[in-house]
Length: 344
Image (cartoon, rainbow, N blue to C red; front, side):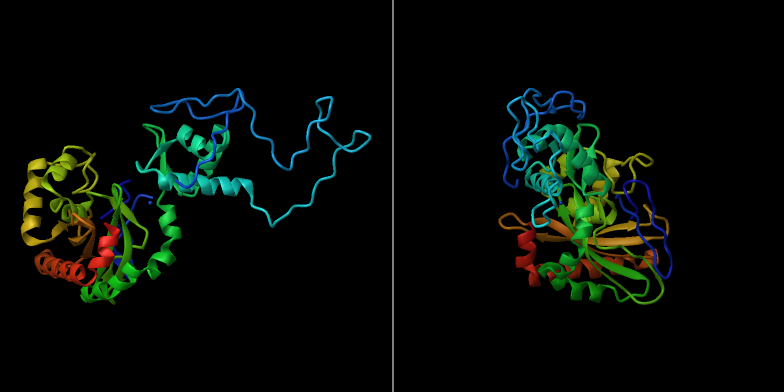
């Protein structure tokens, strides 16, 4: 279970890491872009903001003097610099927070630069600078194809402490501990967010060669055994629609190993019958993983995540681990149903 960006797992004695790539507040009136300000080249759905109007005057800026120059003290000297007031908000930080809230509130999960700046009420030049800063911290990602922005996985890493204390992850901990009893195995839980699944809880077994996945790691929706467990239990029409829209990551990076859809459908059918999906070293040689769907939702019940066991156990033991994982997922549905329904 390596990463979408090609970083593979490093399985070693003691502790190893599975690489991975790398979730509207109130709107303000849109601000016009000053003439000559830099911004992204327009792309699909991204036009230039008007550049004729001036920005609103800051409440702390001196009013213009009668001759058009900035007012100052008698004698024409520069006005004295005001002492910083750290009890006030920092405008740039406040605007960055508004950008993040705007992206979180977009039901499409992504927005163009123009949409963000119009919704937050800032110039495109300022918006671009804020987005670039947030991207450098992995708090925002950019799709260079259609020039849209979305929330980055760094936000989930920041919320790791909160996730560890949340009701669902705390309630899931005993179930994962019961799964991680074989030396050298790791049990973990993922939840679906848009087209990604995020690791929100984990439990490792003591001793042996271990595999470590940190809370906050994320994978494509169709990644490995987890993807098989999710897609196999989707409604048929939705499943076929997803299969018809590559890239698919059931066996790793499709650029080096394109998916055979007939073989994938056969695996998904086997997954529906057995209750779990398996990746027996296809993505990372020597690393085995089995996953079962966690289902929830108010109304239509559907996969909202997975529970998995990964490790360097023999291929012959995969069936036994798979049955244990499937049984544990069913038990979690019975005992944690309301919490899982809130996820869906």
